[in-house]
Amino acid sequence: MLIRLFQKQDSDRIAQLFHDTVHEVNNQDYSPDQLKAWSPDDLHFIDWEDFCTKIFTYIAEEEGEIIGFGQLEANGHINCFYCHKDYQRCGVGTRIYREIEAKALELKIERLFVEASITARAFFKSRGFAVVKEQQVICRGEKFTNFVMEKLLQKYFEKPEPFVVATFYHFADLANYKSMRPAITDFCNSHDLKGVILLAPEGINSTIAGSRLGIDALLSYLRSDSRLQALEHKETFCNVKPYQKLRVRLKKELVKFGVSGIDPSREVGVYVEPKDWNALITDPDVVVIDTRNIYEVEFGTFKGAINPNLDFFHEFPKYVEGNLKTNKRQKIAMFCTGGIRCEKASAYMLAQGFDEVYHLKGGILKYLAEVSSEESLWQGECFVFDDRITL
Image (cartoon, rainbow, N blue to C red; front, side, top):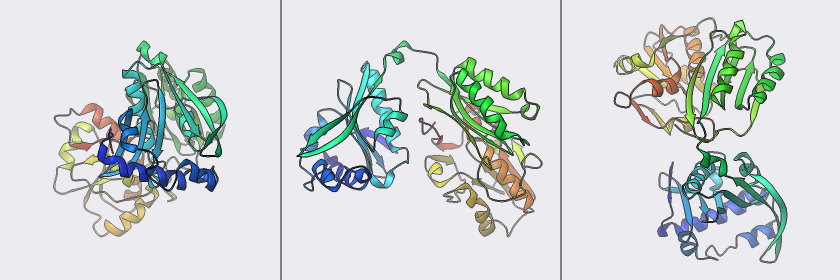
């Protein structure tokens, strides 16, 4: 996905995207008459070229198609902000907003504000905006409800210490996983940690962000449980907190796989350290498989890796059945973002009778942290499940 500034040849496509989004996305919250007043059938009811060139207009583009746009005025006002109807909840809005906030910080704008529709209110709230007031506005004779929302940016000018983002998982028998939830929630809240922690009978999985002291305290707290003593974690850093709230969730599986009897705490494939990964995947006798979902692979992958085109991880057994089962003596090397999906995938393949199954220890995140860019065989960006979208 490319984020760039508006160009005059974008005008027609911007007009169409605006019209389609209003009528097919905002229709859940507004009446047909309101939608027609908001976005008339005459697509050029305003001069889009003039409108978009006078302020900072950021365009999201995917393979030549415009899939979203957002606008920032010099006073901190976010004007239009729309994502293509077919690219909702795909990270488009987040990428555009990141560019807007980065430009606001560059311009030393201390306050961002927006008149958010009912539809967009939750998006801006999740980016740290607070509702100033609910209001009724008139547009072409129709009355609309929207929300004046603001986000104060002064704190970002103080150059605080970067946030630590810790990613970890550990397979263990957590029979009391439900009772663990309140204590972990309280501990994270007391240390101002934000992110996601998943608890299941088979273990724990998390990406969590906060201060250095907060992250270290959480890791020490979890490792004080003998079942989690060997928990390993990976770290990245960012200047803006990638999560706005804490969620501690209970799950039947840490990652949905749908095959019973697969226990990575008992048997998994051979771990491969990042420093040894290049030698393995450049061996012509090794089949290299990216176990992530298709939209993750599109951002980046290892050179020569097979993309199984999975919409969901639980489709992996079906892929193995249809593509790999005829030769169970072949060498298989697998990788994923942090390593957890490969743990399950490798355990499954061993259970299916495959002889040599390898997987990247610590996943792509550890590889990118430990292998220099000069030696790296990674191509593109690495998708992550937070506001950063990619690394």
